[in-house]
Image (cartoon, rainbow, N blue to C red; front, side):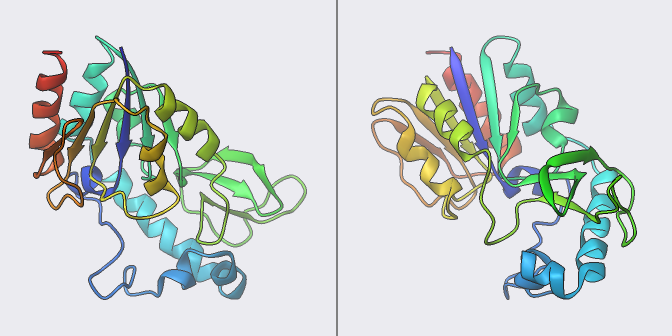
Length: 225
């Protein structure tokens, strides 16, 4: 059975990763466009690089939680593909082997002139860190206003899924929010989120709780199918 998981910030929040955005819309005290847009990077690249250096340090200090591990263990019985909006590597560290990152990866960097020229990068990324062509490197993150290069791949995975699990995301932010519309008409959907923006129905089962408790319950139901 082919299971596709759509994961968002909520699953990683339980590991201690800040979800960046505060109630006032600021990211760690910064306007989102100043640290997560090409324009922000052009205006103050040092600020942007420091912002992601702090995120990288935080990621080095946390570990996968029970929800990450439960999804990884699901691979022992089924074909599992994870499509995540998160830029952390907690799914991989938990043991998941098929992970598609829609919004990029914090532990990677890329050339400012070639989005396909990607490097593993776990240390600080600073002004002066360049490639062999002397081009500055930037975080391998999909910023606001940029295309989501793996969207077509994600759409195909969802379309082929026998079951879809949504965890830690309200599925309200596009383009990721549009992925569910590509699931086949009768594909069962299990939705795990403390404040779900969707109700249970014939094909949708909602667990209005955090990922670490809701994911095991969703998996238990799936294993009874």
